[in-house]
Length: 420
Image (tube, rainbow, N blue to C red; front, top):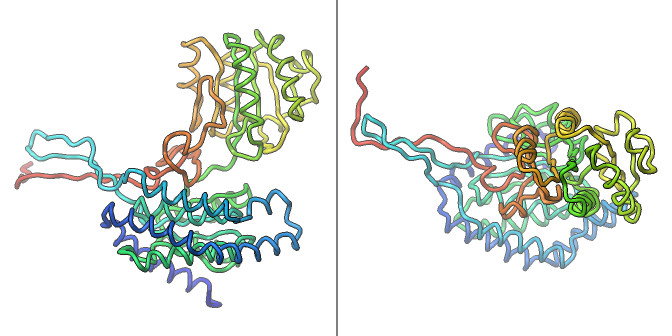
């Protein structure tokens, strides 16, 4: 990238806007063929991908990057296989673009409906995993959007290699190569410039740690699809099946710790706490999970004392806050006060209480008798996701193809004119 980052970013924005207009009219067949070509090209270029990734991994190790982050960075043959398969899966998804719904005749004789259309240009800012470059590009392409991608500095060479393969495939396809552009610098100024390109970019999607997302929220002049925290809850009602409650709660926490849909606070109704907390503690002890409990919790089991800040905490680690509540009303009040609007579940056999929980908990995903770890685009049948949104406008929850589109009104008539 030339020294003048601002000028370069504006040029990328102009080219992305031009590409988005061509993509908006692309046929489903053209998009499917292009995505299959992208998958084939990534497969054929795996030696170059591995070589670039090896440099990134070596740099990360030498720089003292934490081992779990280094592991996420690795792009070996297995990871490349999954990346290629992911692109092919997106190619096979139904195309949302052009679908007309709610078509109805008006008394004046014409028809009014709503058509699904692309958002336009999407800026995606992400960290670590280089497979996100392929995932994000393929989802944007299938939904008819151009994208400007800015990956983390730790994966710069890997992301360049992946983006080069994608653009090479697009250059041999009917779709414009500028539909996928990667910011080729680790300079943080490029992020700041991207966030001000409201003339060209329609929406920003940040994927990464809290610091990144806070910066994007603070600086962006463009609408943002994001979630800041994943403070997820499981509430065990006193009408719950005890075995089910233990299984759901333990899986919600321990299936994976460092994911945004992991349970961070367990709420237990007072009427079942004496029976539920001992087997829960036994399972969590076996998994090596540290429990931090309220006074009522600590009266039943051995746990560290929970502080007020624990109820707000996204641990992303084997640490769990536990609170005994009076019942459903108390649980809902706690979730709506301390939660982040991500994912919350109730375990109960009481139908009326479950329906109240669905209606009154203000989160993107609200569940009954299901592990919070299922809050995922693939598990929801979206095929793939570009992230999870806790916003209330536009997309909410896992953001798949439909979340990367909007709708416009279409009106079809036969020469009708209006007389007031």
